[in-house]
Length: 274
Image (cartoon, rainbow, N blue to C red; front, side):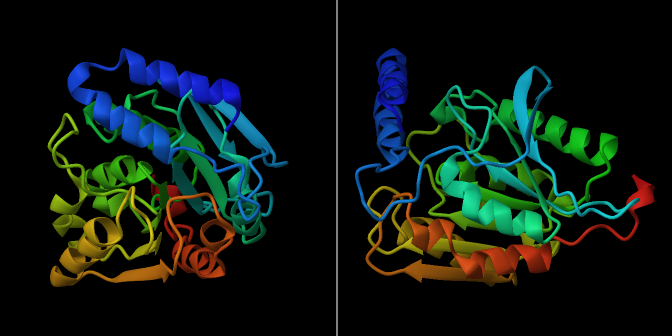
């Protein structure tokens, strides 16, 4: 994260309502790219064919796979969050995205411009539905994308998925947050709304460090997976020993994560039935 970007987040913290200031401060810390760590992934922008376009007045992006067969409802990954002034994914995702593209899987996402306490709220979900309609109904992509959440993106991804379980191929989380009791301004906490996803047989995958003191392993993915399995759902949790909430190769160059997505991001057989 550049100095200018850090200043941007500081300004956002200052203007937050007093009751939400603690939450904003927490998430601004969590968004740090840890650029000073020699083991971190490069924050440079990915050299990928990124299309930026507008959906419902908000910026969205698409990295389209070029090996999509004619008439095929192409598989795609839906990444979140895109935040701040960004309209493209960060460079730490390049390794992962290149492997998705090589497998014929496109990647998309959008910046909903929501403040942290509103992540996954009604406006967020409505904008996500607009992006889904743009890609599926207008551009012919698969009806069941794989959803990929990083950190606070867990609120966005899971709350949308809970309302549309029939439209989800799988859900993947990278040190993703799922429990926000006490500071989010809405009641849709992801782990309280899992029954529909379990009934739809949506498989889950999370990769998380056991030294994450910002989004603790036990309170977030471990608890979510416990509840999901009780509902009969399939869930895979990969624990990265000794790692915390940082942009590291252990998370963003995980072959196990990539393999999981490739297996579950299948194009629709009834592509013509949109």
